[in-house]
Length: 121
Length: 192
Image (tube, rainbow over all chains, first blue to last red; front, top):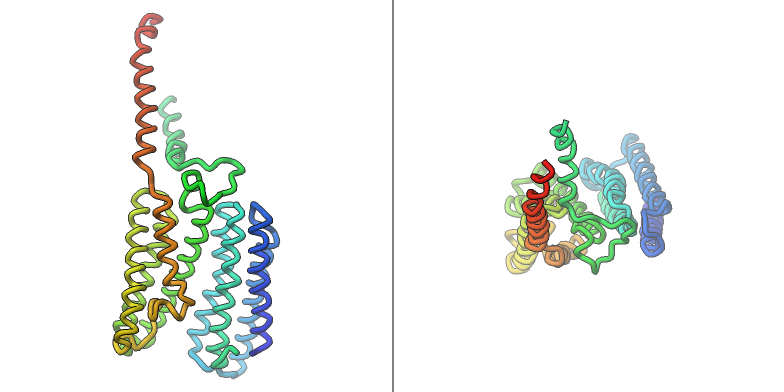
């Protein structure tokens, strides 16, 4: 288990928990939910830069490179897409919609780690 | 001038067809008649479908482009599943009565797909020697593909389009205004 994966797990689970709490507490898209999505997006940017530098300097990954980058691209689009969709209707459910990002990005980072190292754990 | 007015008014009339959302209304799931089906909890279901549409499409594209020859049936099925998810997402996000029917068909096809392929992969694993979204009842995706069509179906049946009710209300108001108009002429002719 890499440090990047542990950091990702913490950020994703915090984001999901914040969004769930805000679903209960706020009847509009909460700032903290939106900021938590931004944190997930920032993590993914850092992750992709880290992976890019590693692979550019010759480190190989276990799986296919373009499957790896396909996952990263999809993951990068996800918080943005879900955010746009979540604020279409500004109700408490926007927060619950945004809670999906942490869950899905965690699964995607898990897959990324598998492609990168052969195993995430 | 009056024709210009009616032309500029037209978008308003289109918007009025949608069920109005009351200001400050919090979107309780119980009051299905007040919340449109693509709002409130419906947003969540559409998000889940959207995520599956994107991920299954990406996966199918990757499988078909990289090694289509290895498992044609499985990869074509992946592509079909992606198409069903995309159709379901778009149809669920729209409010028209026709979109409701399209969404219902897509969700039922999805349900048949996940149950059929799920069973098939257990009975005849050889045919599906590569995984799809629906293999083993969506095992690779935390069985969410198995649960999703049931949630979608439940939501669609809770939020049926109600043309009969709306139309009767509209007809009544139309008749009332027509009745008022027919009762008015004597007065208006009198003044003219």
